[in-house]
Length: 497
Image (cartoon, rainbow, N blue to C red; front, side):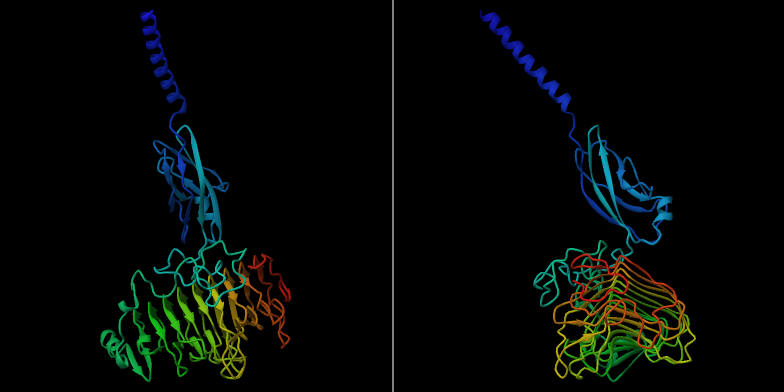
């Protein structure tokens, strides 16, 4: 009996081991675990250009990668061994304007399969070239109280149900001083009393000082100066100068933070009239009376608190602007027309004022105006005339004559809060020009605005002088109200909700 029990025990053990071995063979290695990822590509798109590498976090031995959905046009390829995603020759052809968001399903296989979504941000939204630092308003779309990165004082319409799919200046990335280069304001350079330090460093032939204003007199780069230490303004007196990583806060109405009559490049600057109670000269960035050709570039800057305009160009210039191209992109621009209240209503400044004299001298050429991927905010109370308050006309483009080749106002985000006033988000009156206009994919909260893209009540309407907005039909696509997701269409009058 003992012998039989012993044999039974041996068979039982053997059977258990055999069963265990059989279970191991059946289950194999678990399915690969693939992480969801988001990658951003930049311009220009090239054949074989890098996008990013898909990530496997578990069971990753000997996986084979593939794209199984979202790539019907063949814009992307994936290395089957490494998971590296690249753009293809088709991508070079198809991703022309870098204004799209692709959702790819990426799969990893080791006999079992795992997959996840890889988003490819192909918008030229500025996020690739942005500097370091904390975004100004990371809670702009979600925070209703102003305590978690939203608009100071709160915004009753947040959180928004409809927001841009691209990365937004001041929300998804910081603008102003590049904190990778100058981690704190203490790392910025002191220009010195009466500009003594900056003159000594850059040379008296290049820089001068008079009455609170540092003048840049040659085509040099002025990088990393804290002009706010003395409330100095900056005047650019020649074409070709560059201002980068400069902090300019004036706190005076005697002069503008930046003034130039010439083409200039401004990047990663903090440009500020100083307060929200009626200080800041005429325009925070006053590029009036431009008489030279070239390109004005304003990017990645924080432009705020204007007595009148936030950004002004060409005002009353009767000499003409010849071959002038303007790039205004990736900026946060907020709180214009703070002089409205103190001047009893005589100041009605704009976020942008592009206005010229209706003069016979204007037979000029404006090859390209490109206003894209900016964040426009107005949260200072409108107030009442004779006290404090700001009332801006928004974005105003009104060159009275000349030829504009391409006018692009697209991919911008705009919000004005309860109590603030934006008369209309844009007007455009190139009355006597042949122009190609595009107003596409702007996302605005229209609740407290009188209108958008036109007169005070309609889109792209005729002006009081009887001239139509434009001589060619503008392209108007995808402009959305962030509160309810509704599309803004031609000649739509308020109320919008």
